[in-house]
Length: 275
Length: 168
Image (tube, rainbow over all chains, first blue to last red; front, side, top):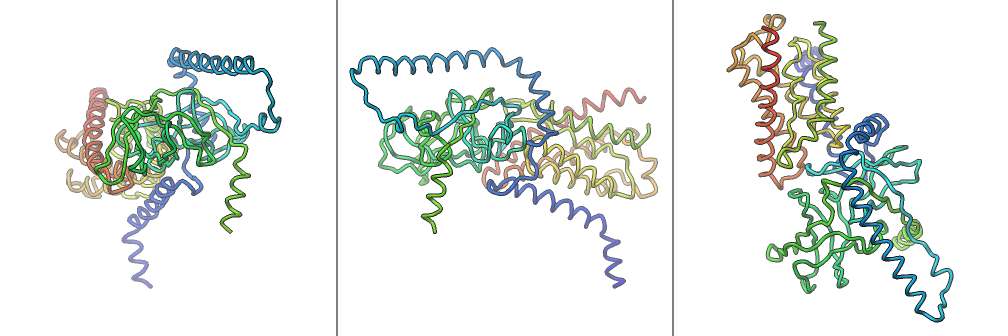
C-alpha cells in the first residue's frame, strides 16, 4: 500500500499528463468519426458568435465576387424560367396530373459562411443557420456553382458542415452522360482536386467529362454539378479518377442548405427492408 | 508584472492571435505559423506543474474549438508542456533551486535558440501526425512540419527580438 502511494507521488505529473492526453486523443478520434456525437466543434454559441463578428468585417472584401456569382445565377434561373414558359406556349393542350406536377422534393435555405477552411486533412465549414432555422444533421450544402458538403453538427443558430475536402466525406456521384456511378472522396492533397473511386472500367470516360451528384443517397438531389475529369488513373488498380472542382473551395460565400422532404419516408422504407 | 495577470494575458492574446489571424495566413496556400507554443516557452518555471499542464491543455483545446480539429492542438501543446522541464534541465543545466530566478532573456542566445527550435519541431510533428490520422500521406506530414516550423520560428524570434530590446 505504501509503495502504491510512493508510486503515485513519484509519477503524479506523468499520470496527470496521461489523463489529459487521453482526453485529447479521445476528442481527436471522435472528431474523425462522422456518426458519433461531437464534443469539440465550432458550432457552439461562443465560437460561433465570435466568428460571426469577424466574418461581418471580412465579408466586405468579398462583396464584388459574390455579386458576380449572384448575377450569373440569376441569369441561369431566368433562362430556365424562359425555357419553361416557351414550352408551355408551344404546346396546344397540356394535361398534367396535379399531384405529379406539384410534388416538391427539396426545399432550399440560404446561409452565409462564417468560417471556411481548406488546408487541413479534415476540413469543416461554419454556417450561420442552425436548428432554429430547421437545419439538421446530414443535409446537403451546395451553392450556385456546385456542391460544398454535408451538415454534420448543429447548435441553435450555427451549423458545422463537413466539407467535401474531408477525408471522411463520401458522396455518391455519377457521369453526366451515362449512369455509371462512383464514390467521391478526397485524398488531402490539393483543394481543387477530388477523387472519384469505384467507377466501373467499362464506363466510357474521357478527360473533360462532367461529373454530377448521383441522387442515390437521400441527401443530395440528383444533378448538382461537381467538376470535370482531369486525369484517369486506372493503372493503379483502385479505379481512381481526378476531378477538378467547379467551385473554388477557398472562395465561397453564400450557400444553400437542401432539405430533402422525402428523406424520412425513404429511410423508414429502407429500415423496414433491413428487418 | 503580476504573474497571474501575465499568464492570463498571455493565454488570451495567444489564443485570439492564433485563431483569428495566424490560422488565416496560409502562406503559399498551406503553411501556417503556430505561434501559441510561446505559451509553453514563456510560462514561469515552477516545481509545481499541475496548473501549467492544465492551462496548456486548455489553450490547445480552445484552439481546437475554434478550428474544429478534435484534440490535436490540445495533445501536442500538452506534450511539449510536459517535456519542457526535461529540456530546461538538459539545455540550461538548471536544478530545482534555480527555477525562481530563471529568466530566459538572461540566457545565452544559442541555448535559447536550441530550446525553442526543439519545442517547435516536436510540437509541429505531433500536430501534423495527429491531423493526418493515418499512415498514408506521411511525406506531407514531414513537409508541413518542416515549412511550418521554419515559419513559426522566424515569427517567434522576430517577435521576441522586439520585446528583448524593450527589456534592456
